[in-house]
Length: 246
Image 1 (tube, rainbow, N blue to C red):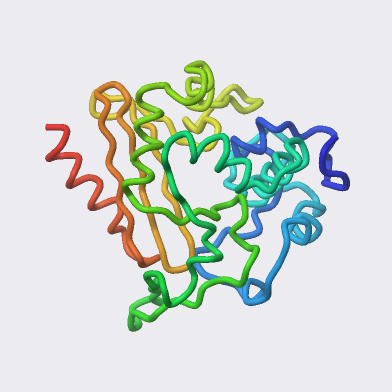
Image 2 (cartoon, rainbow, N blue to C red):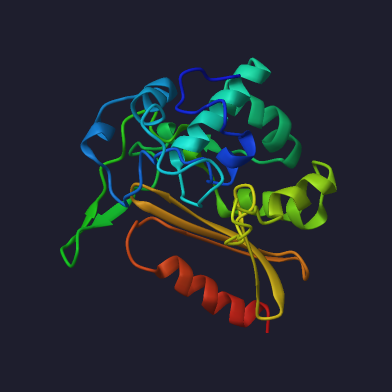
């Protein structure tokens, strides 16, 4: 209906795009920058190259993270709203919450912190950022931990959008076999250590993040690192959790 030419696009739902159950092949499944990413791109180019291939599985049958699906979702927002995605988000989300995120394409410059990469056990190096356009709706935002905390507070307080929409996002999506891995619409949902945990990691070339929200006790832990290797984000989150939630 919105983006023509996508393989079996008449079967894939927006919910399946957001829950990574669409079957669309992920254009960026690895944790490094591949050669195509040195050249600027557009969302339509990503769709043309990856979303018109045969599906990896039938829509709804499996869970497989797909940045391609989020590119399509972002394009749908732009088509329906008639606005660039960041303009729409600034007006509807970031502005009302007092957040000031930046387009990550604009922060891949010497004026901002560099990201770092490491191949196997080799030396730590400054990572080459991707060319413009590759992050788009799959992860285009650059912000401070304090800014992201405002989003977490809105989640915990069920503010900004109707409470039922927060609940919908945090409700695990069932596959066609009736099973789930706990993923809702863009966020993992688990029950661990006697708490409901709503969390998601983030990755860009040279950067890793972890955002973990404990809605029952209204706590949240945000960890940002300017390296895209090691398990530091998880280690730091676990260590802070033991202090904050004990």
